[in-house]
Image 1: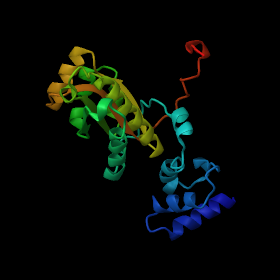
Image 2: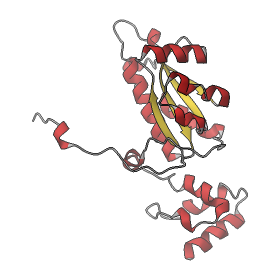
Image 3: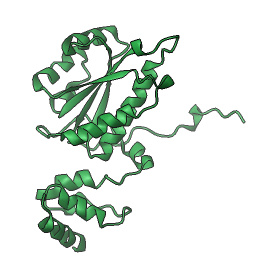
Length: 223
């Protein structure tokens, strides 16, 4: 096939065949063309899986986001990608720009395996590459400004969409306001801030169908 020949040529000329080839190929193809990964050779299928979504716009990202509960074990997330995800989180809006958050990145497998003991719906952590704990800092908001849960929620959604664009799957697992979960993760992570959510991040090993949809009955117009 024409595309397969073109892909092979990119890979032969790429210094890094697991990433540069995919990047070069996709930079030379119109963004509206979707390349099925099934037509690619195994040696670069994972790279294309990541790079085929690198031109995703906001509308596509919102509608393609899924809660992933099965991940490819042993997959590594480069620090560069992790920095982008965390930067996206910190670009979220916050009341009076107080930025009432902090983040704990957990890659230690022994610690990840303890998550379900505190929050039973975090079993996907057994295969996720890492978890990002989003913790609230209400001490940074004063004079009646107590909107840190909303601010942290905005940061989390930014993380989910940025991770998707980079080719990763995520799952948002709630902790706050369940007191036993909050206390459990404060002890596990040795933090004084308020653990609001644990976000699993990794390479997806499943492709669940969309569960979100537009429900017009939930909208009231005042015109």
